[in-house]
Image (cartoon, rainbow, N blue to C red; front, side):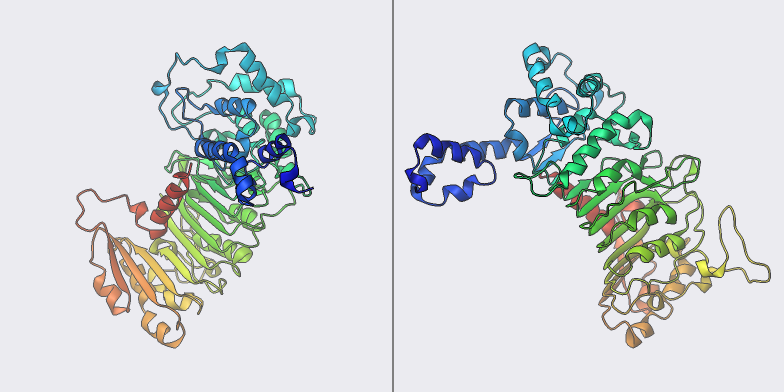
Length: 503
């Protein structure tokens, strides 16, 4: 029996079931089906417009994630349309409409939402106490205590557990509090773990929730007092489809004081992760190693360092940090950026070689990361400065030429400088043999950009080395912050803004 020979009511059911992913293809089979599917196509387009990009700040209530769940409880098909989800409601507390009349005041509506939640497979199949889960969700209502901070939310986890076609997510700042190893978070962790484990199951007739997530966006601001444990986001890094991660103010430092240690808690890898950009973050070699040893396909790695509250990484070891990156991902990385937003101390050891990145094509660095003795010297700067007995103390004249440090595959280099103070000696050392290195070895190097903040006094130094000077915000009345001088930081903002514009 042909499709069109079926009873009309059965054809309508099939068309209904084809939403959202199959309706367009099915409706194009022939004119008759297209005509029959007119109402389903209109419904599909309306749902896509309304829910393709979802957020929790559409209503007068702050952080209205429960409102999205209510819409899904009313029409479960809504969950299949959400591809981009933004859960960071940045409205100030005084903008909340306190007299909002919505489903929360309707006993039947709330019972419908509860029935929907307590029957979700990620709860029931994992043996999670559904009453305790629902009670936790109700306790979370209206718990925001400042402009940016909420608690780790079972409501948010519930929403994530019903979105099979989600591609991109921005969490809320409450995730900075999430510690998977703490008893306080055992209930939300159980739910999140269940969702993530279910997302990897193969053979299901439909996509599993979170199985399509490709992009994770920042949920923190940058700044000295802003910090979130990298550990808080680790469960999401296990999602099998994640390919791009953008974070701000993530911390992975086990200093027993103000830092947060990082541990990859499962035997899984992040096999699809190819781009990792960490802006205004605070990590040491051990912290970044624990992350990158689980990212075997990484091609783009960009990091800007920022000292965090109470002097976390006041002195920073750029040398061991870059060595750690190379140890785990040196053979796969083609695009590398290491810059500094703010450091209150000194560079303990400087970067002295990039030859462990044989396929590197694009490099961006701050001069600052070279302003310390090489790791192999045995010398250190900072609070625990040390020069081995009988050795001559390292100085900035000892910095190798940037050309001699780079692999022969390099195509483009950007060097950001605070010239002349304090970078003059260091920049001259970096550029001292660049011309000869290009002639003898760096045959693929097309551009070497020296970027100077609000001035052009480094022009002679740059041109003498055969490099091009680029000035940042020269003769601008209100120049942007120094931390925005690296081109990758501006591209980071543009890329994240572009992804958010879909939400």
